[in-house]
Image 1 (cartoon, rainbow, N blue to C red):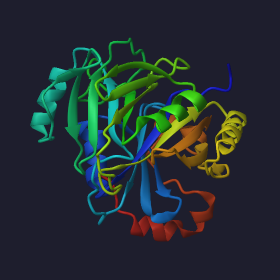
Image 2 (image 1 turned 135 degrees about the vertical axis):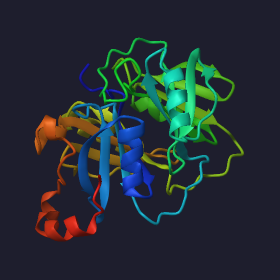
Image 3 (image 1 turned 60 degrees about the vertical axis):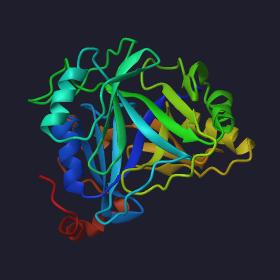
Image 4 (image 1 turned 45 degrees about the vertical axis):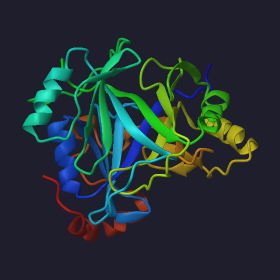
Length: 311
């Protein structure tokens, strides 16, 4: 079936210092910087994309780094955890690495039969490395220090904290085609079989939880993957028919997008596979150059002076 939500496309979060963010995700976690561009609504701020070699949907974590942003607060009406898939026997490697780099982390724990390691990035964003019980054959990006036997493979899941899970669950199941796979206490795991990986959304229901505040160290939005623009507009009709406000199609240079806020309060995006991150620079040079959307190209000289150099 062509008209499917194919799991997660990307997740976008908010950071503070751009250099610190770049250092952590490329040098400590070992992701590849695949695109260095600007926030389309605030061109004096970077939009940094990290992922695998080519920026495959389901591997891409992006950031708006605002230097003086206040620290956010995790709570309800938020995506509160980002889970990465890692090889089964790699968690001990990551424990040692986090200790070496003074990364805040917990002990290895288990949920839904999978071992996982929780940690925080320098801005307080909560992430998990999860030894998936399902085979994950995605090829990871390798660095000199992090080889394939330990490297992240891409997203495993995203967790949303909500006061009432059912309205969000209705979007996942009734619109996106997810199914409830299992439940443990107040955590509900939803999965789509449209793809093999990056296909899990966990809903954690906490009735009395105060709404979180989206700022530094917070997820800004969660993007779900569709094949092309025709499928994108198919879902626009479905969501609009529910009475939810959804944007017009937006060209983000590397994908086309729609945005809407699901009933639980989290900003959802639908994003296409096309045209991809190699549309404006070759794969072997991804992330090497400042790429600007056409409307800001005339300001390149000024922006190259204003934006901090990443080394």
